[in-house]
Length: 285
Image (cartoon, rainbow, N blue to C red):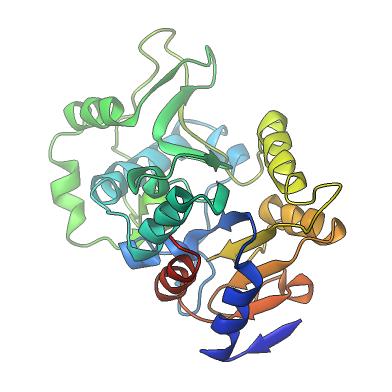
């Protein structure tokens, strides 16, 4: 692996990606320039996300989750795609970027105009009933929670900081009233993969298929571009391992060390927005 300082590593990445079909794998570091904090980037505050087991443990846990989410969603839904999101969407329109797998749940890739996107961990904009499996809108749920908890967001917005994945850090949530499914009265959960849950296998298979298309039986391979992910969890790292085993070159753009660095062909230790803009421009995006 070559780990070099800008601009040399950026030039190396541009040369490697030029003329190849590219698949992007993105993480939370891409959305920090949109005001959404990440879990593991340099300087990120310590965060302990709720696990699926904890969420299912009882009403108190769901009160804590939905109270924090109610305040946090009011902020996250106003977030706008940043320069990095727009660069990837432009790159796709140029024809060189053939697909994108995102570990993010904020929906900003689609808001930027990206078309071929797999939301690996789901989207916060959707809500699922754990009993009848009906999918509904987070916007609608936000309205219901506002009616059940009048003034809650205004009361807590000023003195709570934002947390990753659309939460806000709150201590007192015991009085928060939780909404149930309007169809069956079941437990509502954001349609995202919590820690302790597995990504749906059909979604994983779709991602593997995208990686496999980078390694045709004849001709040169495409490339895997990782942007803004520490690759700490196996959920995303497995696709880097698959690409490496198939002889696909890998470019990683991330501030700080990632678990995929030993497999990278080129590592660019820098912010996503400026690097992706330069790479997309160089590739005709």
